[in-house]
Image (cartoon, rainbow, N blue to C red; front, side, top):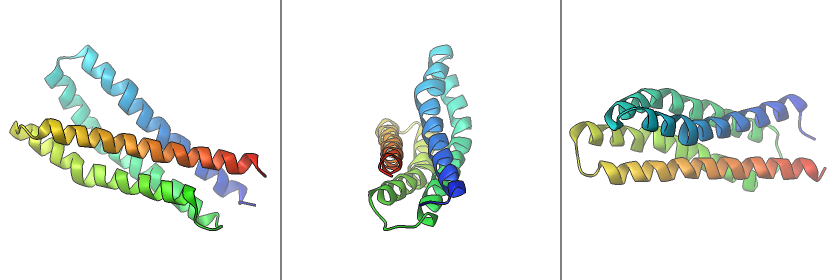
Length: 142
């Protein structure tokens, strides 16, 4: 049986991670684009990205670390968490800065790169949500 403190931190970090993605992607960002002109909303969202990426790294890293610390054979939950964390790193350290540079340059490749970044973000959300579902399943079968 998992240490209750590790389990609590695991579930808390997973919930915070998923909640941050859902809020940023489906609440805050769309609200900004509805409330302000496109360019202004884009600037504000751009200012929020560094904190968003840091939240992903912190919550994702803690989710993965606590899952590994709880032991057991690495299974689908660990794979999903590792995939989500790697996608978050790729998004924040790779494609995110590229999207920003392309937008600043007025490059026509911006829209495609932005689309890729949105898909990566959905990938992080899907993998993290799958890992939470597997954690819930493992708790319900004890």
